[in-house]
Image (cartoon, rainbow, N blue to C red; front, side):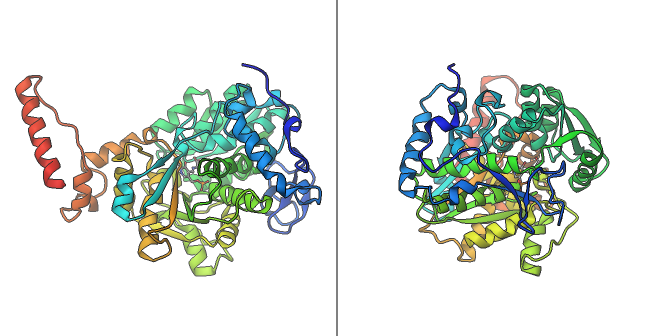
Length: 467
Ligand code: F0G
């Protein structure tokens, strides 16, 4: 593999990579050196990275086509930075001191799938799913982690740490291992899937299962970083947000830079929706897209802090909830990035909605039935789309992209319980016919031809009766 080119080498005039600064989203003050908790020292607001050179008069909007062709060209390059679907877009990211310092597992470059079965079921002709679960550790977290881990290593950190519902910890542990850093994981005891926990163990993290929920883990981490030399890699870290922006760049590239009408994402701690929204606004401001898609955020009914905040306070003050959902990735009651998410909803004219446990289970099975599959938290997108259609917010003739955030293999217990009819007590009721037709429990048979032939016949009969 050849060594990477430096970002500056191939940038069009006016785009000065690496020229970034931290700005507080609360009081807009510019922060020279962020504190360990990545909060503003004046008002405790979250920080955001901005790029002053983009605003300068030297920025030549007519040359954005050059950027697009540079990014496209990198897809056939073997240079280390170009092989990453994140660093391929490095002109729109903070630049590390040297390309050699980048910590990458060749994240990003994920597929976008047409969803014909869900298209037929919902009536939305142009329905796509962008599958971030096909990243190296099985979730979208890798796109942010490559950037944040790079800057952690550049800062000479020995320990990195996160609170997590599972995916962040798996991703952080992998990138820390690649970078030769130690990682500390704080997860709620008994509330994350074994698949995710086992990833963190395999990648060598020091893992603490705390007797609390995710919100309790995050509170503790924020306290810990003030007392111990650990670098926090939750999405409060603005470098994570920058990396996670790239899913939107890549998505637009895959759609030939024609913006879809709607993008729908799951909401948990709300870093991802903030990142995608930031990317959409930046692309519009830079002239990379002609119009803004509406970004909508879907939460589980039992963890719907954002929905309540928007509907009950018009987005002015956070309403925390005691979170409960089987979609454990988004079992979060007090989302850290709620203010960023509210801004993004307002700026893109998106909607937010919550969906029930049964709706999540059904949508997950439907995404599985497309041969795509995802973890429960990702399935809120399809469940949410159905609601937004009912409300008339999404129209059938519009183009919709669902962001699937995690891999099907992340939560096998959920999938097995669903197919065995053991998942939720309500879901076992006979009136849920649609759910029953999506179930494919394994059967145990004697190992002889007759038994398998008989079972096959029965399977064929039940396919016909469900058709
Ligand atoms: N989908 C999956 C699969 C997730 O793991 C998460 C968050 C989300 C959606 C929500 O994204 O928090 O940016 O709004 N998981 C975090 C974790 C909290 O610790 O793995 P968000």
